[in-house]
Image (tube, rainbow, N blue to C red; front, side):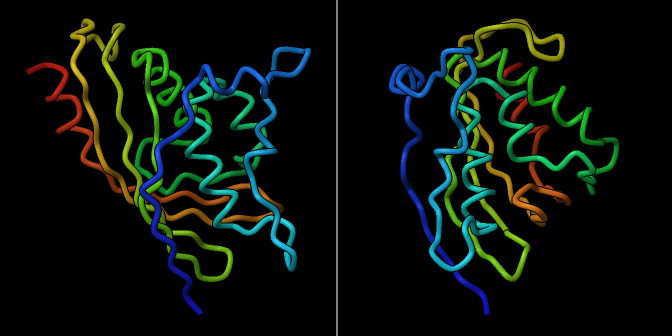
Length: 168
């Protein structure tokens, strides 16, 4: 059975997250996942929480929570580490970066998600000097969840158009 959920909600700003900071300085990301009565954490909620955690800007904590250590990236040229490194560069270059989940479809342990990433370009990114421009792109991803973490990841995004927005 396929379940569909449509979201047009805006992510919480970083200032609103201050109460989520632990004494150690790490953020309590697990609380972002609503529990379901039957299964604990559904694959859909885990994937949504992962993408929307980008506004917290602590990708290492986010990845430790949501990305399986044995995750396989089904994206040419990327493995788990290079995906984290690229996304860390994006977060560092866009001060107000946010990912908003627009739609999700689930079937078993697989979740298809359509999301939009956007922010103002405030630091060097892939040799492109800061432009101050707002840039965004929409992506469609399919993630398979195992043991409450993403174990397989497929992605389709027009990253070239995103880069062109920065260089225009």
